[in-house]
Every structure is written in structure tokens, then in C-alpha cells.
Image (cartoon, rainbow over all chains, first blue to last red; front, top):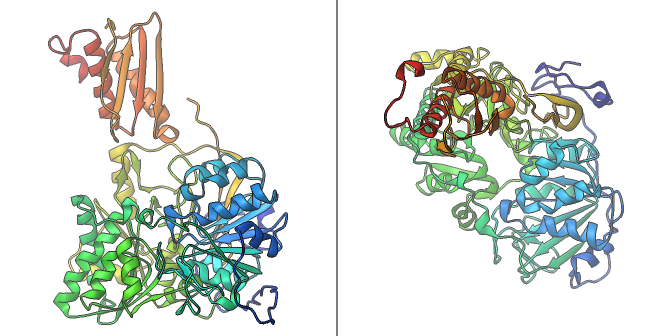
Length: 517
Length: 98
């Protein structure tokens, strides 16, 4: 059946659910939330320390067919997820395991082998890169992976579609009761926003830390009342691997030019006024928007009420200059942001549920004026792909992309028109991750296109003398430069389902057919 | 043209292609590319046209493409062939390259 973004969803996957029907199709619907089954603790107790991670798993009833979760705030430096998977699968010999991750990358590379061995049989994640993405794309996983946005994940957990048996939560510091934090430790990750909802919904919670501190470790991201056991290890993560090269301020003149154009579009909006709110990703041009926005804010003597989402040093610097009242932080992208989170009183932790879930009474994204996002591809219907590479292999993360796009008043995609030979603006994206009805403006190095459903923005740009064109003209320019790409060829098998933030199915990823001339 | 000895042109930088040609009794073309799925057939067509225009009938042609545009591919193939025929310093048939 074709859904609202014209993707053919196999009937078998639609049992008990719908294809994507539009960004607000489920607004106003009622939802009965799930709840965990916990083990009550009534006796006097001094500590929840476990002798080992294995002992903690046994005490928490680890079993075949279970689902475990973890957060990835240590990004590429994470050690706990791989450690937990090894204990469950190698030390305890468990099988038929489902992974419920906030992301998967090289730090969890051991899971690729467990997938190939058939020990991990289910994967649900908000991002997948590296060898795990390759394994899933090659059809090694027994069931289709489910890709959810950062808001879609807490929705699925709250709706009981994912039931977490054990959450392994890496913490920079914890007391022996499990009051845990992303700061005050040897290896800090800053915000633990990705972990908070898991602590509320998992049957069992194991805090893993390398810095045990005196009770009470407050303020805590993870509250000890939700924690079964605390496990001390040598190192929870390597913070120097939190920042990837993406999180640096670009010097590339092409990217700076695009960032400048984005800032101009924002400055032309009537919503760019004192108290506006803003979010940006960490791609080169999106990060650089902060720099140009600052000039407009100073000129017009206006301040930002809050900056939302993943946080980099660039936005912290704006707060230090007095231009941003609050930073509501789900994850820190670099060491500067981690340090700032630990010290600035108005740089606050924000859970994924608060941030972006559609399964609550209004997430922060709904209160967002502008969001600036990058893309691997955008098509002429303004659909965005951030999940599959040009070869059709899973290598990306929706993160909060679909959530902020749908919640904000104005979603701006910034991307070069071509990357090497690949056209970024195209006829149809490989995989729809953010539906075009949530995307308002596309800024490239060859021009700006506005979604025709936003005639108000078109009028604003015209009034400000900002040149713009159509998305079709951008596609034509891209194809003229690099040639028209041949469509990818697929096998029948579905290797991943891209779930919309509201639980509908936006698209599926099939196994790629090996290329033959 | 005749491929007299091994020759190479181009780099493995993004948006370039490295072309290596060697003498061989039969003509064979080997293509690997970072954009094989979308542009593999187009790369092959450009290579075949270029070889035909230069009247290359024998030799092994290896293209390692890193997302080069057609014009770049064509230039790298031509350079490798001319180098292999010791004609790259002098004797380029410019009228054939148009």
C-alpha cells in the first residue's frame, strides 16, 4: 500500500499499524501508557553495588529472548554497550536478544558478529553506522531492524511496543544507590538525556560507572529509586571520542556561504524576534549558522529564549555572551559543551521524551521556532533521507530530525547541491526519513528552494530581496553537473523499517542487489 | 593507439579517478567506483567511447573511480593511454580528443 509519502509498504508489515498519513495525523488521539514491572526493595540497605556486571545481570533475571537497552551519550567513545552485550551473549550464553539502542556505531562493533551468529535477532535504534549497518543491510539480522527518531523511541517505549528488560546506563558518576549523573566523574559525557526514559520504563536498571561517589549524588540524571544495581568498571567511556570531526567549526567557504544564507532566511522571518527558539545539528554548515545568527541578534538586540537538542560549544559560547537564556540539552557533541553543562546554571538536561516524543502532552520541539538540519538527500517532494547512503546501505541516524522538523514552525535543510558525484537534490530519495510535509526550506550552495506549502515564507524572502528558486530547478542543476543517477536495485527482503515518530511506517529499506554491469 | 607499457593517470582523491593501463593481447575493462550503483553503467559507457575514439584495441584498462565527473574520467583515460604510448609530451592528436 502506498503511504502519504508515496512509498510502497508491504501489507505484512502493516498488521496493527498504518502507513504514514501526515505529520499531525495522530494529534489528539488517546494513548494508554505502559509501565514496568519492578522488584520492590523495603529492607534497610546501604548499597546496591554488584560484584560484577555478570552478577548484576543474573540478579536482574537476564534471560533468552530479552531486550536490553543503553544510551550512547559517549558516542564513539562508549564502552558500556559493547560490555553489556558481551556479558549477556558470551558470558551468560543468552540467545534471541533484542537491542533497543539510541544509536549504533563503531563503539558497538562487537554486536555485528552477534547479529551474524544469530544471537542478536532484533535491533531497534535511532541510528546505525559502520559494520552493524553493513551487517543489517546484507540481510544478516533475522528480523527487520526498526529505525526510530529520538522522539519515536520514547513513544514506542511509552506505548509498550518496546519493553526493556534491562537498561544498562553508563554514568560518569554514581553513588552506591544508583543516583547517577553524566558529570562529576573521571569521564564525563554531560547530559544523560538519552538515558532518562529508559530508567523510567525498564523492568531493571543497571547503572555502570567508573566513579563511585558518596550518597547522595545529586542532582542526578538517573534517580536511584529506578535503579536495581550499580556496577563499577575501569572506564565507562572515552570522552575524547565524543567529538567527531563533524563537531568542529568549518572554515570551508562553501559551507560558510550556505550558513550565511540560512541565517538570512531566519532573519527574514517575523518569528526572528526577542525570545525566539532555535536548534541546529552538528553538520559543518548547520553548526556555522550559530556564527551568523549571532550577528543578526546583536544588530537587532534580541535574545534567544532557548536552544534545544544536541549541544555543541558554539551554542554554549552564545549563552556565555548573554544571547541565550536556556540550553535544553539532550546530548553533548564536544568536550566544550560537556564542561559548560557541568558549570552553567541555565544549561539543563532534557530527556528524549521531553525533547521530542509525540506520546506526551506537548514536547519541547512543539515550541521550537527554527531548526536547521543537514541531509544526505532531499527530493522534489521535500522528503529527506538521513539513513541510507547512496549505495542503499544503512549508515546514518534520524536522531531528532523528523521530530524537530514536524514540531518547529520553520525547518530549514542545509546541504551542498552535490557531494562528489552524488546529487543531494534528487527525484526521489533512497529512503524517506523525514517526510516532506515537515520540511519548509532547502538551502544549497546553488540556491534556496521553499516548499510551496509555505507561501508565507516565500513572501518573506521576496520582501527581504532574498533570491529563491524551485526544488525542481535545484534538482535539474544537480543532474546537469553530475549526470542523472540510475536508480538503486533492490532485492525483495526488507532489512529495516523506518518508523515515523507517531508509529506509522514511513518507508522500508530493502537488501541491496549487488551491482552488475 | 597501442598501449606499449604500463602507465597511470589520476589520483584516488574524492571526485577523481585513477586509471592504469597495461599491454595485453585482449581488451579488458575493470571498473570499481564509490558510486557504482548509480553511475557504473555511465562510467563504462564513457570508458568504452573514449577507448573507441582513441582506437585502442588491446590492453587492460583499470579504473578506480572516486566519484569523478564524465569529463574527468575521459581526461584520465586519455592521459593514461597517451603516456603508455609515449605520446604525452608530444604527438597528442588534439582533434581526436574533442
